Image 1 (tube, rainbow, N blue to C red):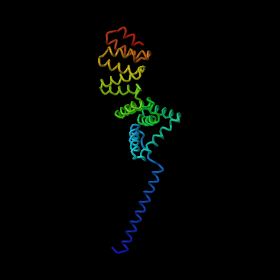
Image 2: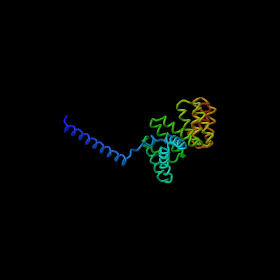
Image 3: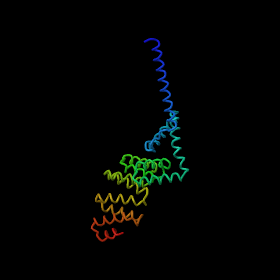
Image 4: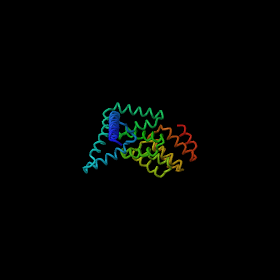
Length: 249
């Protein structure tokens, strides 16, 4: 190849490199203008909590400060919305609407955002777990409830939901322990006695089931579910007249 040919090749290579460099610069500018949004469920409260704890530990040792600041800013951007109750309430209503329309994936994303802003709101955690379960993501639903129990350790309704999942999986002894825990934490929550009583009735423990339904009725004397549960137990025990009276309530 003569010198003129070599020069042409070099010029072509230079032009090609410049075009590639210009294309990369354009792509970088577009990414800066339109950053990719990460799914809220991919950045779950559990993940944020773990990362924040790890980052804080590293910062204490003089490492990972940039990562810690980034995580803290992310959490702060969510938590700052606590000062906007109207926005929070609208998001909650929107999540409820999506749930009623059976758009469980979208509803789960909304409830996940809400759980980051007010982790003390146990209703949001329970709704989030429900949407995940209805969307077929049972293991995620369980993880959400277990995390919610750590955030709200004295909330009986959360422990009751975990007990329900254990019961559905056939882990009856574990479910009993969790129902007992839920009842101790919130003795006036009637749903715990209803679910626990139905478990004992199906297991043939009629005396325990009767006691649980009766205890639940002390907290919710107008509960049709509890009266029905008690009536079925009485019928199985051969107390037809008492059962009829309970079932008519």
